[in-house]
Each structure stands twice: as structure tokens, then as C-alpha cells.
Image 1 (cartoon, rainbow, N blue to C red):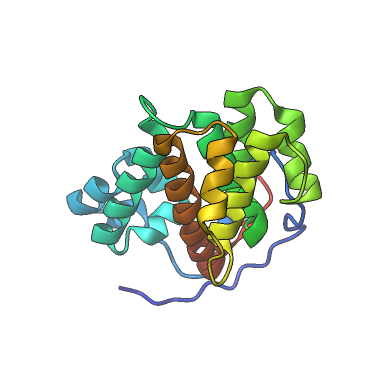
Image 2 (image 1 turned 90 degrees about the vertical axis):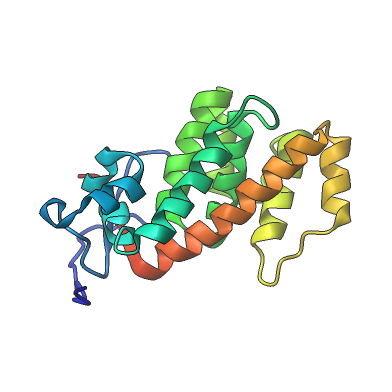
Length: 200
């Protein structure tokens, strides 16, 4: 494995939270498509991700990437029960906004807007931060996501009670916890190995 460090020169890097598409570049060399083995493609789960520089870097450890991707997919796509997709994306957006992960916030805010049709409220979260007033149900989800993303974590029974009072079921509260906690970890990983770039 090469440990070549990339020193990119990024002109006009994104510095504001946005729902627009942006890019990302790693500080370590990702694998190129000719370097990928069957095991790498299995770990990517979706072969199209081989063209994504983030996943092409993470696939250097295929076992961990495969576990990460299956967890991610289950959190966001397994929506037969529990929290609606829009609010799973809201939890990820709130964690990303708190952590300063501009790329993750852009991706998940777009999905939150798409599935909720509340693009004005989603943009308000990006513009005004995690204290923005989005209505009590969304406020409770954002507050719980922020508490789970704090260092050290600040999530308490009061956050769960607030979610319950806002109308969330036990399964929905579980989805908020898992989605926000996972994305807190994912943000920190992405922020530690690369940086956002303008859209290609």
C-alpha cells in the first residue's frame, strides 16, 4: 500500500454550507480502478463508487469499508419501519452542520429537502446553525443529533423524552440515535482524511 500524501492546491474551496453539489479530495492516494480486485469491488457494494475518490480511498481497507457501507445503507434505505427518510437525512445534516463537514451537509441536506419538500427549513438549518427553529419535531431531532455529536456526547434521557413528546415512536427514536451517531463518526473520518472542493 502506498502512503503517498497528496498536496492538492484547491482554488476557491467551499467555505459555506450549501445544498449545491460539491466535490472532495483526499490527502492520501486513493486506489485507481485498475488496482481494484474482486474483493475491493465486493467491499464497495456499488461498483459505481469506484469512481468516487472518498470510497476509492476507504477501499484500501475493504473489510472496514464493507461494514461501513452496509451500516450506512441500512440506516438510510431500510425505511419500511421507523423514521421517515427525510428525518434520517435531517439527523445526518444536523450532525454534519455541527461538525463542520461541508460535504456531508451538502449531500444529506439535499436528500432532506428532496424527501421532506421543506427546502426552506433545511436551508435555514445550514444558514443559521443547529439552533434554528424548524418546528418542534424537527427541533427535537436536531437537538438529539447535536447532543450525540458533542464531545463528550451530551445525549440524555431528556433528549429521548423530548423526541417522544414530539411524536416519535421507540423505533423512530432509535433511528435518530443510530443515524446521528453514525454520521458523527462519518464526519470525523471524512474531515480527517481530505477536504471539500468545488463541484467538478
